Image (cartoon, rainbow, N blue to C red; front, side, top):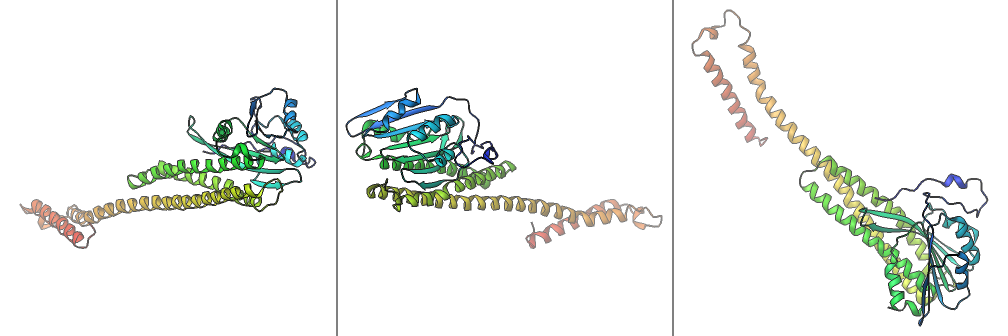
Amino acid sequence: MARIVEKGASRTAGLPPGTAVHVGKAREAPVRIRVLDYDPSELREIEPEPVEEYFAFRETATVTWINVDGIHDVELVEKLGKEYGLHPLVVEDIVSTEQRPKTEVYEKCVFMVVKMFHYDEKAGEVVVEQLSLVLGSGFVLSFQEREGDVFDPVRERIRKGKGRIRHMGADYLFYALLDAIVDGYFGVLERFEEKIDRVEESLAGDPRPSVLKEIHDTKRGMIFLRKSVWPLREAIASLHRGESSLISAETAVYIRDVHDHTIQVIDTIESFRDIVTGMQDTYLSSVSNRMNEVMKVLTIIATIFIPLTFIAGVYGMNFKFMPELDWRWSYPVVWLVMAAVVVWMVVYFRRKRWL
């Protein structure tokens, strides 16, 4: 289930452009900032307390990744933004969690907003949060709403020096983070696929009203996922088209691969939406067919009892000159006639294949 953030866009109404105001769910947890600073031969991983200590990495020749967990401390985000030369509009978008996925290219940086999905095993639900990425000359800044992300494989590759990440620039790190986010979509889609399989099994058995609720929940999740991923396709496309000099031609090739993965995610979402819509139609058809079967049985029973009711009604009038009332065998004869009517009607219905 997707997390629903508090509405807060009205808090920025009437303020000048570039005014940083936190929009989103209020949080009290302290902000955590982690730094990974590396080159091919050396790696430093620290969590200094004063925000000013992060400014020392600004002029180094290494690649610096500063990850901020928690954006509710607007003052801290503004300090980082000012030190690393971020435009005020970028800082405003970072602290607003209701942004649409997008890419904005500035003279000194590339700013990107994406929706990050990961599955919380403890809660048993899909967690969604906004992630802001900033690519600059020799550094990458990432801002997320709270701790917990999909970047652990990237951190391990940096720590162990696996692959080419330690030998490439900040643009490759930017790509690696973006690739981890898109890969996280596939993990979420696998969860949806498992849920769809369970619902299909329930439909094949005895579809209950709870199945319809699961179908609606799955469909809502697909719509939300589609709204988050669909604009990301164009946002990534603008990166590999070479709109920024901060992204090298070599890295642009990898970003194009991420773009292909994004299209694959969108195609999978559309396929799942069609399947879920088909399951909804199947459920309604199953319920309708079951209702038709019930009505068919009730109609046949009522039809059988119509002539029996007629016969019982005739002989229940108790007129004085009804000769059958004085016959000794009239009672069993009436029962035989009624039984014969029932047998004849059942045989007739079977020949018509109504039974």
